[in-house]
Length: 491
Image 1: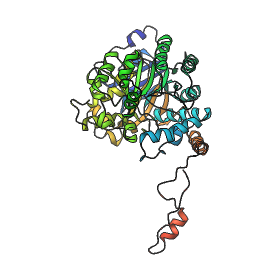
Image 2: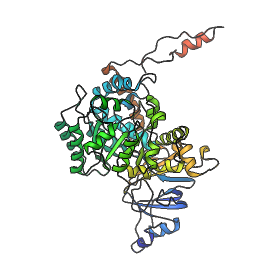
Image 3: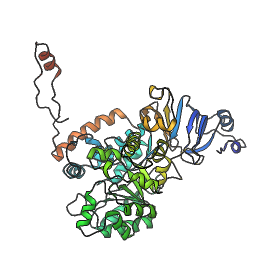
Image 4: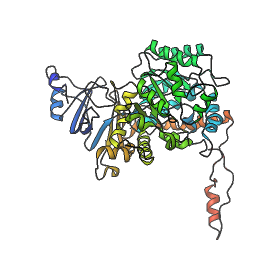
């Protein structure tokens, strides 16, 4: 492992920060773990890694962050996280309705009704929650109406992100437009975010069977011309294959291959229900996949019956992890997604399931590579962005210490996050987000939730009765008495 400490002594100057006396999980190619290590951060980048005494001498007078008792890991990469509408009504869509009903009776109407203020606040809320879990990079796979407001919300929180406005040319869909108009809107979003140090644009189509061939091919050509990546949804359940067949198309991935739009620029959200030929096409073209296990379980989409992600990875395919939305995965906790992925793949009995160390790589270095950010983030190496997470091992979940990758994945260590840096900036310090007034955010989110539900005309009666404390106490004080359930109001 190299450091820049020796070179720096010729012209000593302070670093922006020294993270001192940590156990560093580098996720570098050799997967080295460095106990008692110190990291120097300059201009948002990792300038050196080495002993504290050496780096203090190389960068005299630098401010320090004491990491004694902490494991430092690369910031996690969430490759598929919606940030609009759903966060304001999180955990509200019933979990006893089919996936298609959840999407078209709930999610689509909610997205059609959000305002720009809703989207910006919702994005900030998602980013704040993500940062608290140690997610430093978030890829938004498409907001519906206000992508620049979403970008502003993410930027406020200080997370690294990609953002785009959903493109689709299906009939009667909210904000759908003809292919040419959709492509123009995509280009405008990318241009508006060009040069942003953290939040950049990319091409985002809805995907499924809701996009014409002209829009698929046009998006691929636009991404090539603008030199940006692209993403869309495909085959989270069996419906896409059936719809493509009904339209006289080949299976979804094969159809995209025939169109010539697969390739290393493309990140497919989900790609669960695939056949062997589709897996082969993804591997051959270098097309990446974002797996969101929590969402498939919440929506009952058959991940344990049909998922091919281990086969894709073992064949050399590019794979990352995601959490989807707040009414599918219900939380942008990538630690939980990693644990679910590892457990579900083992329990399905797939040959050679991914080990904990391999799954943690999907959440960090390999995930970053899959989404085209491998040169920037995902590992702790000199020259890369200082996207870092400090985990407090003096907590009970780390007592006693076990095998590091096993504890990171199966212990779902997100609840031990102490500090988080994005591009060298401390955005979480001592478990508190530093960039946003969380109390004010919480209050505004509650108000916007109520207003959004009123506009859409959705009433969510509680499944458990609401009984005022005075009434509950009075009834319980009578022998044999019990509170009388009564209809509550929507939360």
